[in-house]
Image (cartoon, rainbow, N blue to C red):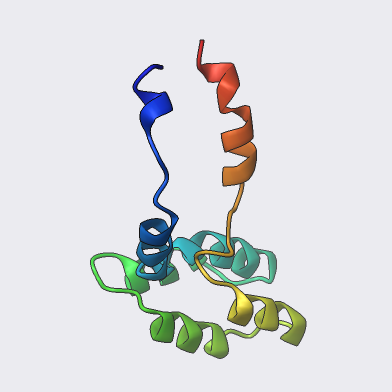
Length: 100
């Protein structure tokens, strides 16, 4: 615990790292695709992202091709790895229960 208290967050590095990893958005994409009737969204995204560089441009191109309601598609076009937090905030707030 003493060592953890000495750690400092480098927000600039974290933001740069997030901007390099658009595959982080595969989770919300596959959930919404499944909800809207897509078959095997996991496999579609796995083929697109696994072992390959998944860039912002590739992400936007993929979202544009999806047959989703316009308001849903617009939300995904505006989403970035930085703005997508999933349940990370809740997990971080609840982490104290695991540290004794």
